[in-house]
Image (cartoon, rainbow, N blue to C red; front, side, top):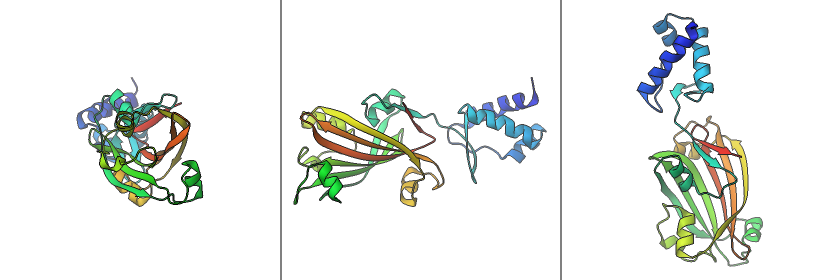
Length: 228
């Protein structure tokens, strides 16, 4: 067995003992510990990173990776259902919930809201086992879900709407892109502003073809992935 393979196994054992999110020693520190060159240590770290055991954050170091939540794009499952499928406990922290006019003509047209009409905007941090995974801003058609601000908005909005309003929700579109979080989003997600994130824009309607939802969500790249 090559030396880098022995070091890889030793680092993997170190990561398992430290647990998800733990920061590992630097390359130089590990080179001294294993009496090896930094190049050899770097190769072992790269292999563990490629296999998903570790993740490197520029300027911060190497960390034990947390297992990712996998959302299947073609399945109309909610964030809550995706987390439950991965064995995590889903919860939310409400940032704001407001009744407001459409912010522009495009939003008004999407929801068919005329002058004097309103939409509901619910902004939440989505958590898995208490760890921030995503920040979402859900805009809903207020005419379809009247008085929704009076309900508990920390659970699944889909489950709430289906239960309280007896509506069937059909997802109509998902647009996926990657970007960096702004300072506000980074603080909520507990990541650095240099940490790549996954953004989704989801639209949905109810029976009759009326648009119900347009949700923009930003997920931590180290903890969330989308299966196409």
